[in-house]
Image: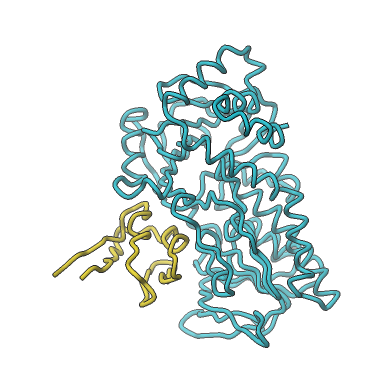
Length: 389
Length: 60
């Protein structure tokens, strides 16, 4: 480890390692700092990704994939199943292997990685960010960087230390519980989503199969409704009722910022990517591919900015512009849709299922589903068309 | 006097509390958590914790 790098990335999740990979490929010296002892552990994730999105940012290694997914089934509060008509392919990943694989790719491109490296503050020089303060194996270090990248996930403290408002409002934080369990007997080339204010208020429950009876079963509820009943209490009730035979192998907790995108994600010498920048799709809570798409752009822009010797906010804003074009604009619409869908009553959810089931199978598309759900809020139908066509 | 009690044995070290803390008053390491003196006892962290590792105490 040197005491100065072009780029220091805080956090070795998919967003951080992808940013590092593309920055290193452009010739920058890059150091990734990860507070945990091993990249990819623990897995705090339902592990689902779309094929098209993932392929746009990395060559997919078959070892990363637990289960190929070819369909989606949604369940209404009263138990009506709606299978969506879709040709899209997805995967349930093994995040442990996936994250490690992405870190290896970053390393092969020239990035250094340090685990058990706890970043606890930023360095400032002439009124701008100039590096990080970090503890590693009992020693304190001050490491300089031309650009610091905050890829520190839901905590998003790097941005806060720089003066950005990265806190997630309570209502937008989905507090989540998940188990990986065996004996989940359900169609395993489909993902299964349950919408009900009783099962998962202001959120939803997911079953993401990993093959041969193994599956991630989890749910998220809004922080606005988690005071008196925790997500694990909700999950236990669901498992008792629907999968009493489940054998739980792993239990994990986590938070997903299903929030409006942050107004500010770059400053002189500083960029935020992934969950830290609230780049999660607010409807699905999916953040892997979005974080990697942002990471690719951020890494390339950072690399070019360094070559030009200009790491000012103005120069780095190219990243924001390109991200907005790629996914950011859509996320603003997804947020509006989330606000409506997550607050639907169980009666309205059941009514939506009843109506969509009147359509022939091939017309039960995601767009048709939203159009049906939005009958009571027609002003949003135009928005749904924008993101689902 | 209100305070927040941290139950290490319950904590999953997920960072959800850090994300909602309005005052950046929580330090989270791989397997440790500290509430600093920036805390104003707003209790957001207590209400959001998925595993109920943070507990509101009201003594005296």
